[in-house]
Amino acid sequence: MGNVSAFCSCKNMDCPLHPTKHDKGCAPCISKNLRLKEIPNCFFDLLPGAESRSGDSFEDFAKQVFSSRPEQG
Image 1: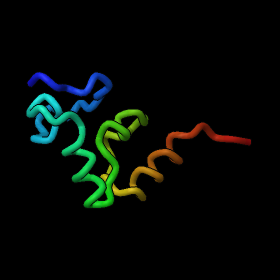
Image 2 (image 1 turned 60 degrees about the vertical axis):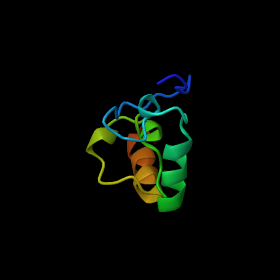
Image 3 (image 1 turned 30 degrees about the horizontal axis):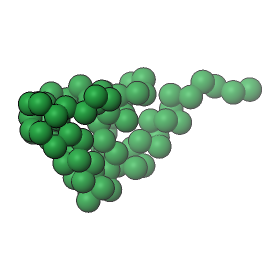
């Protein structure tokens, strides 16, 4: 559709909320994620190994962030 968010990096093209499926940009996705207390797919896409995550919760995102950090020490 015409109003795709210029910065949208979501790779989940099958999602009915993806900006290519309507003309409301990222708003429907963000609204759904806020309501369910989840993190949008596009945030997970920035992290290595995110495709094998167990869910989309804040906790799942935090675990993914910490597991992708380089070992310190």
